[in-house]
Length: 342
Length: 129
Image 1 (tube, helix red, strand yellow):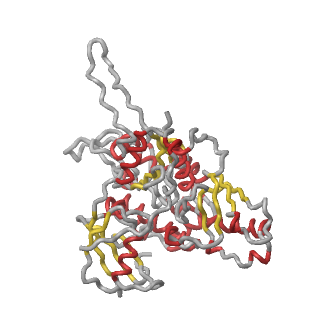
Image 2 (image 1 turned 60 degrees about the vertical axis):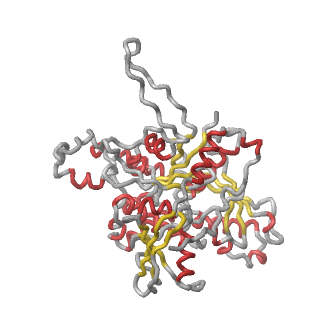
Image 3 (image 1 turned 180 degrees about the vertical axis):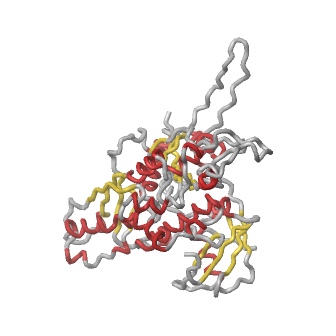
């Protein structure tokens, strides 16, 4: 049974959407198209993929914009998307990641910080021909997207548990059900299967005290807890994490949920270890003196902050919890690094 | 030991920023981002293992530049095997999953290497689907 908080955040993640403005490249509009209407607006689920929204865009363009005869020569499989700035948009990236990655790259460019409101759609240019397939990495079919998705799930499974037994022991119908859950945007269908893969975070599962080194008896384990412990987000090998830097690259680091002393690893610890130039480690407080019994260390300001599912994440958030509650449908915790403006 | 060169240049980041706008972001940040972009480019050792009917390679251990995308590994292996365009070839890591072609060899190595090797299985039919 999944506890209330976990379900809540999983649902919030699932229901997250981003505004997109899709505009056909004006140079590629077929003859006799209805210009002035060549823009389509959609509020797309963060956990969905571009190939899944193409049919809806196509329907609109065929009905409203394209001339019927000219439309006949168009082939879906030659369509591809670019951002306004000319970045190729990948078929196999979750739409939310495409959006956040665009937002953080803009923190390098736009003079004003991005507004926290979701009012500004991301502008996509739709090209109707000559896809640069070698750079898109994937054919634009829904089947190819599904295969890529299933492999991402497996890769995440391997990172978490050291094997892919949870994925491979799912029946075919259940595996297909995961993808269908995304296509149909059905939270319940998806999570009925996904809860067999994802780690759990009940309040009782969080390690209450750090284990004493060298003593396996330090933490009494009742038999009731054995299963819960095994599935706990705090007992996996590593959280599947991808880090997106503005204008690239994408980094993947090993991210154990607990530190060596048994305390949960926080975002702030993870980033001051892995990206210390942007998240400088905080110095320890000076020793207390008679004049100042509780001295505070001078805090070093971070140069960047993190966006997870479009939300600014607090530095004290624990990786284990984030991985269990804020990961995408493919099981990956995608963390985008946005630049702080002074 | 041979090397693979990366033939895929991501278009991302191709837009260089105008100088006037660059000044909006502190030098410190830009320097940090540059560092992480170039972040150590060592080579990692990849071991190829044929599965099922796949042809066996005489030499199956290669050093590959870590910042290469996995797609470069796919291209390299196809060339080594003399595979024609359209001939099916499936690649897996640790006999479990196919990585995204845009993931880097370094990322895969960090998470999945065994005893200093990144093990890449190849097959002419889907093996772990």
